[in-house]
Length: 310
Image 1 (cartoon, rainbow, N blue to C red):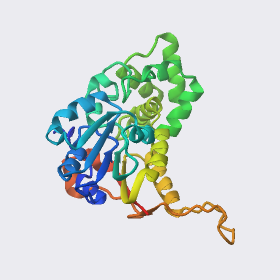
Image 2: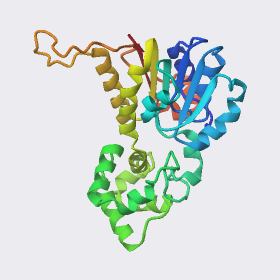
Image 3: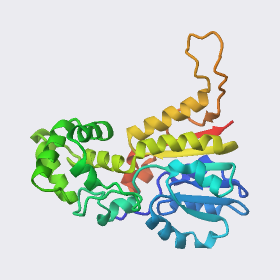
Image 4: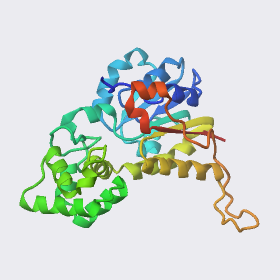
């Protein structure tokens, strides 16, 4: 089955955004435009700003959204520059924003992009192919201790020290050039018990390297900092994450924005003057139902969190 064009938690996202026909909305992770298409269909005089780091995604979406060209603006950029992107478009406030984090299915499914440990391709992993840092550089040039750190921190890989050491030993003989070469080096560093696990032995390491190449976690933090102030009163922010590191950043940022006050708990009165900026629509994340999971297994780890501007 081909899962490449299934937008995750689509109905839940549309419901969360409470789209007004005349409103202004942002899809900060356009991908293959599944979410954007449903937002655009609900607009009349409104406007939808579609942002993506990947020019291939913008090119593919142009045809898909062509019927709504009068209300859709495609923007090549990183969502962590949200503030500048909206300023450049002359937009001061928006009524809703959606961010579907992580690598998109078409990027995973295109072997040439180097995201997959199942297909052989040059080590790339760039979401934006105009960026200069590639997975090849990370794997072949970063110090062993930095490799260990990202494997442990971004991949939550318990065998990070052994894998980092194996990568350095291999690259000392010859540069590691392809995804399958790297996957084999990772496999060789892991004990037999780990190789019997259900998931692919390279999965966590590839995730870690991808996050490092694209500076994904810091980008999410910068995006959230910019997004909340740009919402109009009553505007909704919806964020889908796919792994615990992203979800923790989203959860903590929205909780802080909902709390407002940053004074220590033992202060008798607030002296910081900060007030709540949003209210949380649900304390627990929204997840996919059984029907969606059957149709799209990639939705299994998706978590949707929603906040509303006060």
